[in-house]
Amino acid sequence: MKALVCVLVLMLVCSTTVHSLQCFNCVDDNCKVITECPPSAKFCRTEVNATFLSRTCEESCTPGDDVHCCDQDLCG
Image (cartoon, rainbow, N blue to C red; front, side, top):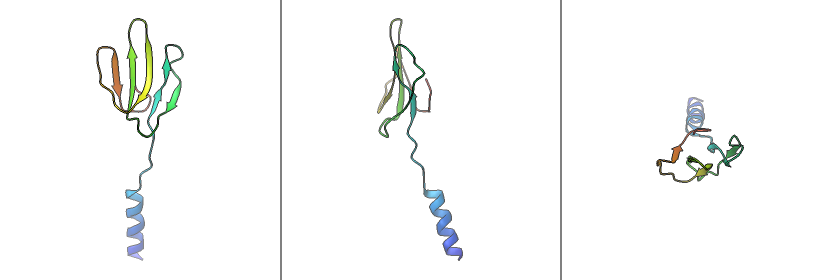
C-alpha cells in the first residue's frame, strides 16, 4: 500500500501541465488581443517606434532599441 501511495505521489509531482505562453498579438491598432502561442514560441516580442507597433509570439527574440522580449504571459 505504501508503495502504491509513493508511486501516485511521484507521478503527481513529476507530471506537468504544458502551458502555452500567452502574448498580446497585433499590428498597430487594438494591441490587447490575447493569443495563445504555439508550443514552440518561448517569447512575446514587442516592436515599437514612432510609427509602428507590433506584438507577436516568437521562438526566439533579440532585444534592441525598438524591440522588447519577455517570457511571461501577457508581458511587454
